[in-house]
Image (cartoon, rainbow, N blue to C red):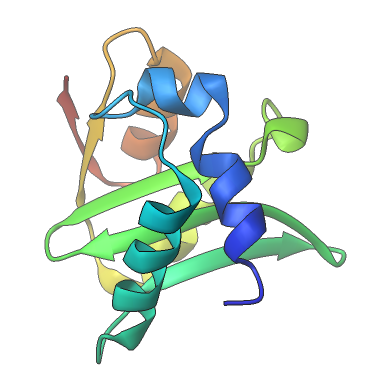
Length: 119
């Protein structure tokens, strides 16, 4: 739970919200409850990517699907591709649901070997 506030800020970032299946912002109590449930699972499959001690993004596996976000300060630096390649190496190819206007994210997912489903 030590990264809860960081994940909360990324989750409510305006661009992240716009590109998400549900574009509504999330309040702190809802986020905290979701994270507690997620981390309490036998297979939480929630990963935070770090580069040189900096948290740069996160990806989550839910069955056959992957969802991910890159920290606002680290976007446009190839981090999504690196995370998605790592996720594929660890868990195999997944389905990434991506907003139609998020072409860079779709390219990264496809290049990493995942399947894209447009929203």
